Length: 251
Figure 1 (spheres, rainbow, N blue to C red):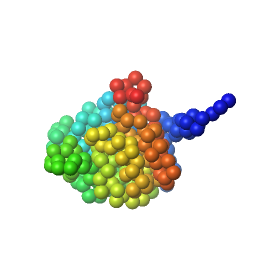
Figure 2 (tube, rainbow, N blue to C red; figure 1 turned 90 degrees about the vertical axis):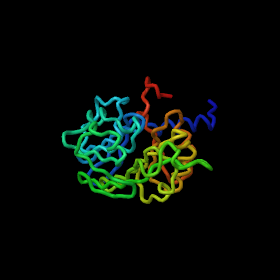
Figure 3 (cartoon, rainbow, N blue to C red; figure 1 turned 30 degrees about the vertical axis):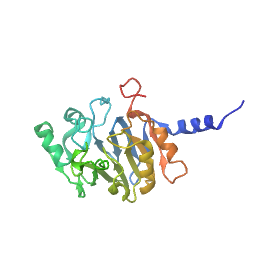
C-alpha cells in the first residue's frame, strides 16, 4: 500500500490530539481539562483553579474551584453565572479592576484585584499579571482597538514548581515575547481579536515555552499552529475539549 508523506503527517498530528492532559510537577501531576473556548480547569495536589469559566461549556462535571481567574470584561471571559457554578464558598476570584467595575455585585467577594505587571500570592498560588491587548494597526489610535492595554490580564500561575501562562485575548505583544521559563503556554488564535495560528507560532518561537496549548481558536485550525512550530523546541499539544462536537464553534 502506498503511503504519502501527507498521510504520515496527518497521522502524526492526530496523535497529538487529546481530551485532557497532565504535566509532571512537584507534589504530583498538574491535570489540565479544557472546558470551552478559553475556559480551562487546572488541578494540582488538591487545588483546583478555574480560568475564565464559561457558561457555554459543560460545567456539570467541573471541579469546584479553590481559585478563579478572570482575564477580561467580555462575556466569553467574564461570566458571573459560570463563576458561581464552579466556585467553592469563599474561594478567591482574581481579576483586573475593569472586571470588578463591569461585573459590580454580580461577582461577590472575596476577590483580589491585580494590575498589569503585579505579582500576588493568592490562596498560596503565585500569580503574575501580564498585559493582554491588541496592537493597533498602522495609523490606528490605540484606544480604538477591541482590547486596550491595561484593561485585561494574562496570567502566569506557578504551581508545583511549573509556570503556566494563560494569555487571554491578546496579540503577540512585547510583554509576551519577553516571557521566560514558561513550562506551558495557552495561546489564543481567533483573529482579529487575537492572533492567526502562524502569528501565535511566531510568538511562541520568541519565548519558547516547553509546551504550547492552542486555545480560543474559534474558526482556526490548531493543526496549522502545530505545523508552524515543527522543528522548534516547543512541544505542541492539541486538546479536543475546547469545542466539543455539536457546539456552534465546533469545526
